Amino acid sequence: MNECPLCHQSDSEFYHQDKRRIYRQCQRCQLVFVEPHFRLDADAEKACYDHHQNDPYNDGYRQFLSRMSTPLCERINTDAKGLDFGCGPGPALAYMLREHGYSVNLFDIYYHPDPNPLSQTYDFVTATEVIEHLYQPDIIWSQWLNLLNPGGWLGVMTKMVIDVEAFASWHYKNDVTHVCFYSRATFEYLANRDGLQLDFIGNDVILLRKPEHES
Image (cartoon, rainbow, N blue to C red; front, side):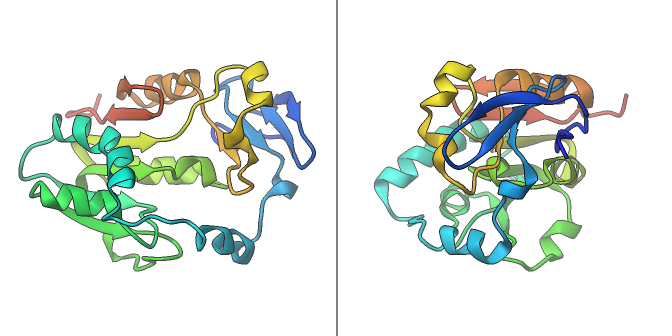
């Protein structure tokens, strides 16, 4: 099955193949994705995540996450309430935002699985190094937008595809838990489709704002 998992376009094309996986690209939203049979099962996926070192007190990791927190804090009110989606076992970004006085709830399918935060709405939702892992990015994307209050911000951090030549030697694709790869064109497609304000911050931070009023 070669349907795009993000926009459901059926005419994806071969993009690249390495020793482990085959990658296809959607001809509508430009998403690059692995064929479904290359995905890990839940146990194998979590075993990979258990090796991640996401210490909220590690200066290097905090500096990495500041690429998200700094521009986000410039855009949200001081009383904003947010959700750190896919926060992992050490929710460092949430710690950092709380230090700035923001209220931040947590959700992670493996490490913070309590669904109650998903029944609320927020002024911002963050997903740092999350979107590339999603098997059903279409469903989660819609969920994120529904979690946002009018005028709320969605903050996504992910490395982006440049072209097939760069992709061939790209270390980011070698993580077997990474199954979807986005480009600027993909986020432009989503922003245009869903009526979102789009800001690219550097090479790997994408901020999108939900309209304040329904069109």
